[in-house]
Length: 72
Ligand SMILES: [Zn+2]
Image (cartoon, rainbow, N blue to C red; front, side, top):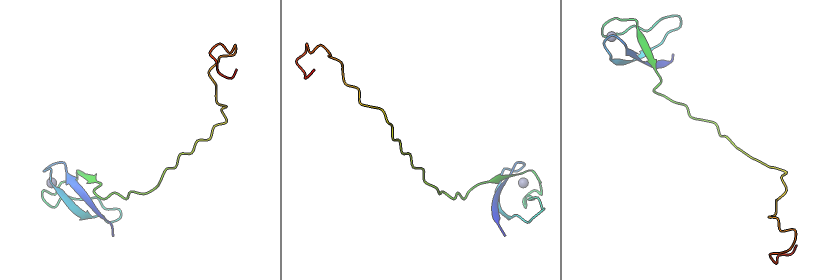
């Protein structure tokens, strides 16, 4: 049975409540049903790999006339 953390919007208190199926959480403090589900436990997973391979030819700075002395 999953254990969720709820916070009551009425009395602003958080509780860990066993969430049963087809049953709304009720605040054990004030009995209110306006409970906000908190996500206290995060399951962090997954990796993102970014690979970029471009077929762009290297552009050489243009000195086509050979005025600067490079091998042109
Ligand atoms: Zn409450």
